[in-house]
Amino acid sequence: MIFASDKYLRLQLSLSARFSCLDFKWNEATKKVVKLRKNSNLQFKVKLSKVINLAYVILQLVTILGNDSTTPEKLEALLFFSMYAIVVALRFGYVGITPGQMLNSLDLLEQKYGKIYGSNMLPNRKEFLIALLQPVCYLSCHVIPVTLIVLLYNRPYQPPFLGSILHRNHGYVARFAILFLEFVTFTQVVLSGSFYILYVVFAGICSILKYSGAVFSSRPACRKEANILAYRTLHVATSHVNDCIRHTLLPVCIIGPPILQMLGSFACIKLRTEIDWPLFAVFPVIVLISFILTVMPLLAAGRIYVTSWRFMNQWRSNYFGRESRYFRRVGKSMKPLRIHFGKNFVDACTPLVVQDFCMRQIAGLLMYYNSYEM
Image 1 (cartoon, one colour):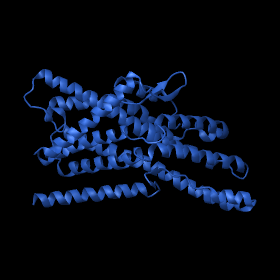
Image 2 (spheres, rainbow, N blue to C red):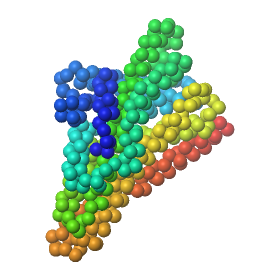
Image 3 (cartoon, rainbow, N blue to C red):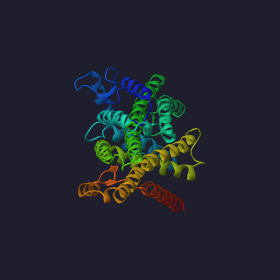
Image 4 (cartoon, helix red, strand yellow):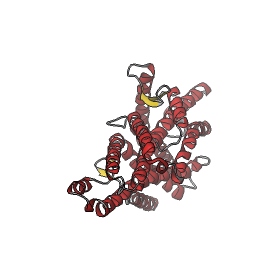
């Protein structure tokens, strides 16, 4: 796959098993990601944690809608609620083949292409940048929940968390019990969200980008039939990735982070004097992370389509057009690789369209807030 080592994948799955938040585990015997057994205790705990997360998100939404809070407090509550809601959608998200099956199929393809293309499969600078996200992601799974608990310890009634929902006159025992529940719940959110975003969406898209580069960098005039077979195999791998992420995982990644980006940007611009520290410091960080999560997978997916479309035209004009009728028909039947979300696919303009939408909505929020104040 795109990641040079499975060390952090194993660590992530091991930590997720302790908090019962993923349906997968690492099998040391086969060195693959496997799905939990249906009747195992861990599988039951994972299903229970999903139900608890969903119920907590619904409770947060009801609290936000029925609470007469100030605008900064409502925005703070909406920001945290959006984070929980995005991860709940991811946890209930995949349809079709499971993320474990997708990762294992990409691993087999990595080994096959490594034997065929050799040096063309060596990591480049962009892949090292992607691989750098692994330790950062694993470290964040420890740091972010602790940071939230410190914040809630200093602000025990911060909406939309349990401290603001329950009665405010609870003692120290109840307060620490609430903090413990928040720590466990938010750790499950961070672990689940980071796994699906990094190891499923990012890994699937970036792996296809890597393999397509290896296939297109070879010389089709010398190995025409072999490259046709390799490209068809790559099409099958792309279909596996699409089957895993197109229905819910990628749409959530396209919709969720822009919402966080819009809310965070609005808070940084308009409510910078009304939100207390250290809570305000969370907003620029969320905006930056949301921007990265929005742009990176879309750029990679758009590049897959553009690169494959360009090479398809080059192959058809330079090589297939001069050969027999069979190769001409094969060349015409070959379609560009596409990463789908829903019934649409990502092209080169999709990241710009999403960012343009975000900027327009931020401007609309600012104009509405100014007119509301007047």
